[in-house]
Length: 143
Image 1 (spheres, rainbow, N blue to C red):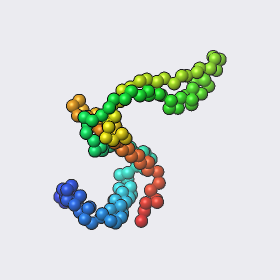
Image 2 (tube, rainbow, N blue to C red):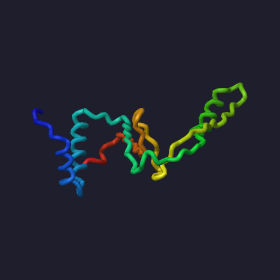
Image 3 (cartoon, one colour):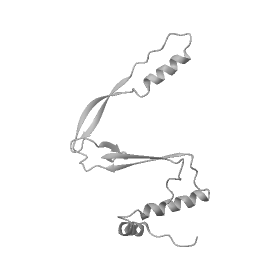
Image 4 (cartoon, one colour):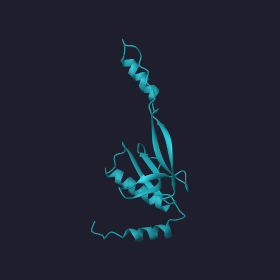
């Protein structure tokens, strides 16, 4: 409880040197995770999400503008069905997919990256990585 905490850079150096080609780090992490679960610090009924952006290897000044049509079609048929179930004595409602026109900046170097606006002054082309973890049963991790 009164031990000093190591610097993060020390941890990274040790990780690279010792755990690079083995699964020891995963085993240590699992062991610590199960200790936290056994002591009631972890609730296994929720889903956690995290996302981060990784800068693309592009020049932010080299781009072309494209005009694209964005359509809102996600779950439109299911939504229409649910509305018509509620409208018992009325004629069925028919929803039209709305579309809008947007201007996008597309990198000429890396077409798969997207423009990420960090703040008012800084804009970079980047990739978005999303991670979702749903913890329901951790018995398969035990070693």
